[in-house]
Length: 423
Image 1 (cartoon, rainbow, N blue to C red):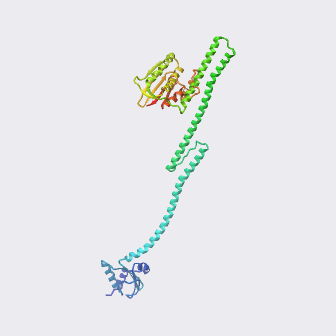
Image 2: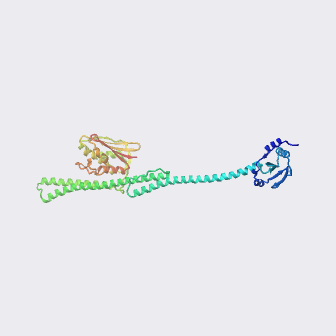
Image 3: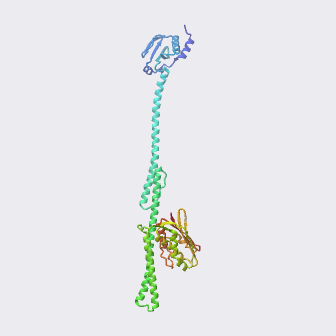
């Protein structure tokens, strides 16, 4: 059978690959393939180890061979034909390896993939290094800057600057250090202010004690000298001088005693003599002690003390002193016909002892300082002869009982002291 020129052309287009230079010789040999060079339908050379028994080809024979291979369920070879001028290059590869077209593509593709992967890895590593550096710088800066501020803050604080505050945003742990530092500086500042206030209070207290003691001593010395020098001859006048000396001595003794009590209560070693008693009966007994003074001052007395007992653990002697100071203050600084109220409220969580009056009230400017010792200008240090320590002593006694004392007072309306003792 002879082929026409047109048939030959169609076969070449269908089966032949024109660019024989595309043959990957090394790749073919590696997978056990070989290359046959055909000229004039005869094999003129073989590259690699030939593994079939076909020794010559016509164009038609080759087409029949190729189609026959495609029809078989199990192919022994995969082949591809390359054409260059009058020569054919037949590439054959055992089917157990790879299809030729796939193998050649894979070889070529593998090389390109390897190069692509290599360059991609280089680029990825570069980007990773840059990213890590950026993250590292960001994190280091977020730690370094707060630490520098903390160090600067500590340096300022060590030089006595207690107004310094740290203000930055960092990691949670660093922010915790910031908050602790600010709290510490604030507490130190408050402690120093309290210390300064305490030192000033002590200085004022010593000054006031010296003043209050010096005044009666000076008077006693003056009257004693007049009597001793014989300046006073009249018997009645001598009696007046002696009475004055006695009163000033009593006043001096009272001041010293109040100061002793205040100092004793202020000592960390002082302990209350706690016993359980009926606090209602206790308060009735205290009122009875001052009933004469209440009548003498022409006060109206209102009492609201429960009949049923309320048992509570307290130091009867010291609590009596605290309550008496409040009663004495009301009697001493209010006008006649004032109503004095004394009562107890038994609440679920605490006991309230209330001592109030509808008298003149306490001056607004000293209301917040009335429980401080030797408060200048307060009612307890006017001509009526208070020591300036009575309310301070009362407050200390209540605090030793783990209680609190609250004062509500309005000028021209009256005052109410409320002692609150926790159950």
